[in-house]
Length: 298
Image (cartoon, rainbow, N blue to C red; front, side, top):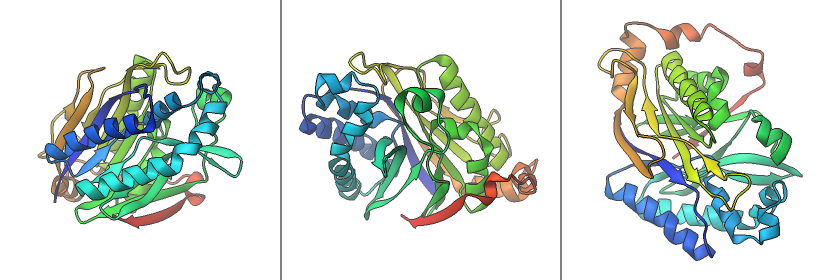
């Protein structure tokens, strides 16, 4: 089965009102739709552009902004739900700082032609998120999203730098890992992409990275962004020799769109030059026993 994936290289924009944000968001969705994409991946913290709608004193308060942005959460989800239904697409929305039970989690919502499907929360916090922003590690639940072409899971930014989540999701059927990300520097972007390539190698799957780009000087949280999009795969039979399906030059706004053939992944897992995925299944971690797996039908 072939899927056409669009992964965003996305600038954080200032908006004068919610309607401006809606128009901007739909222009991105419509662009990917016009190019035949079936699934859209937006980056981590792309939703922080909604902070531009808050008062300046809140925008300048690094901890208060992630609390106050929650006033837009329902409208944010409703709008992405409508867009997914209107354009008959799967959309992994920009991750959102969700306030629940006095804790803030970094959450990526998923929508399909049915509307809201589910979400994935980030497990591992960077130092900035933990020490300065007040964002908490989420309960250890992994969500797998099933379509007629196969299944995917989500590993938000820092999470993709650790093998455990991708390994478990792939062992439960995923052949695609989506990695929305937000990084400031070349080093940060490099860590995410090295992690993504490693996960593609270990699990013999596709891994797609979406990142924020350029500057948003009005925001103390996401003011500097360096990134680029890429789609990785195992370097094995009938797949690109370097394990790179497609890659975009850094800091250029737009979609990276690529058709992915999941029969190639199945063939490599069953008769590849190596058996990374099969051999990895014999390695266990204590954390694996704590993690719950939840399936969602797209």
